[in-house]
Amino acid sequence: MEEIAAVEGVDVLFVGPGDLSVSYGTPMEFRNPTLLGAMDRVAAAVAKAGKWWGTTTGTPEAAQEMVDRGARMITCVVDHVFLLQGFQQSIQEFRLVSLK
Image (cartoon, rainbow, N blue to C red; front, side, top):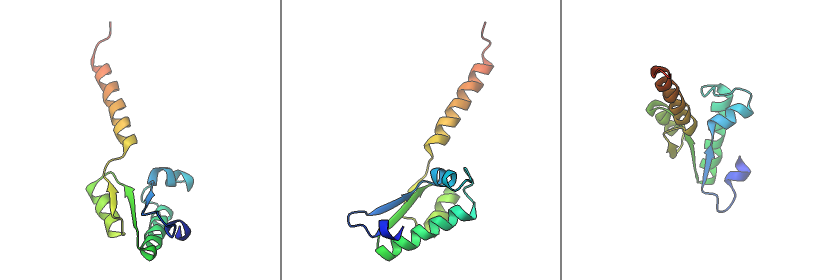
């Protein structure tokens, strides 16, 4: 992380918590200490390099926690959650309609 953060021209490091949690073998466990520790290591590396880091969150509380951990770029929605919710809504709508 320190080497990446030190690269000239790299201004922001972005942590994808979904992908990272899968890499650590803890899929979608966003409160997992290993995942949070990795984010803290990114925060320390970018602070040392004078740069920013960011991540995606799903709630205002999670966004605030990441800001408190040093994140400066927050994506407040998760694309796969929107896709999942859309699919679930479609299934519910089809179940409500009597297909004859």
